Amino acid sequence: MKIGEILELIKTDTPANIAKRADVHISEKLLRKALNKAGYEYRNSGEKGWYFVGEGDEETVQEQLIYDFATAGKAKANVSTNVNKEPINDTNQRSNVGIKHGKEQVKQANEPTL
Image 1 (spheres, rainbow, N blue to C red):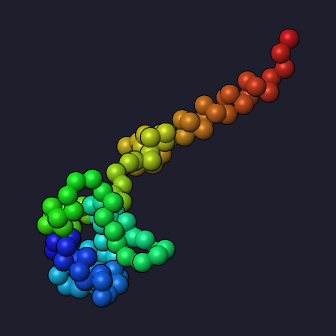
Image 2 (cartoon, rainbow, N blue to C red; image 1 turned 30 degrees about the vertical axis):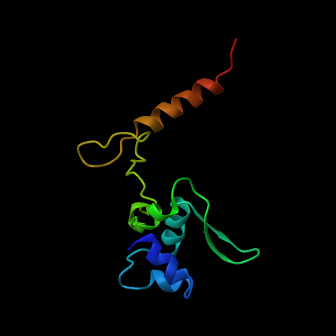
């Protein structure tokens, strides 16, 4: 859907209702963010509404699709948290190497120095 079409719909309806329409395919939050990225801002003081404050020609921006400015949600990379853990041995159990090593360090720390 083009930005100009969405701006016309917003004059008579809320972004939440527009986002629920079957032909829009994005959430209300993404719709608002996409309009901001396209160079529009919502003004709550004075005459309320979406106004173009971006660079370039407003007519060319209105001809672009809203999806060009909508980005996907927060996708997180699949990062393993097992970096500092001991390797698993042949029986699929964690080894106690780290525990034994830690106990040896505690013994050495507790020994009196001369």
